[in-house]
Image (tube, rainbow, N blue to C red; front, side, top):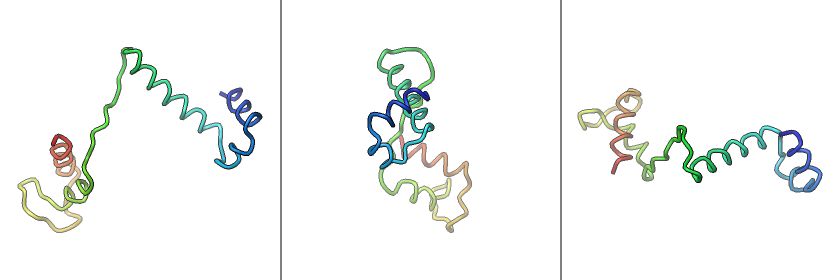
Amino acid sequence: MRDIFDAAVESMPAWCDGLALELHDIQFQLCEFDKYERIRLHERGKVTRYTYLPPGAVARACMLRDDGGEEEPGETTPEVLGGLLGELGGQ
């Protein structure tokens, strides 16, 4: 990782400085690339799939109760919120 970081800083110093590139950024991108390659090559392993939630879904879920009634802000429990987000994500 350090070799990749050093090569990037040496070959593109202005770009790296502009992004405040750190070694952790290289680690993060290598991890993302590894996940991409495992999916592309159909390799085994756990892959978390992204679930799209439409704009406002989280805010709406925070205002609903599990019985569908309106609720005072701040009263939604994590369990209720998780269930509602699951339902909204499945639409």
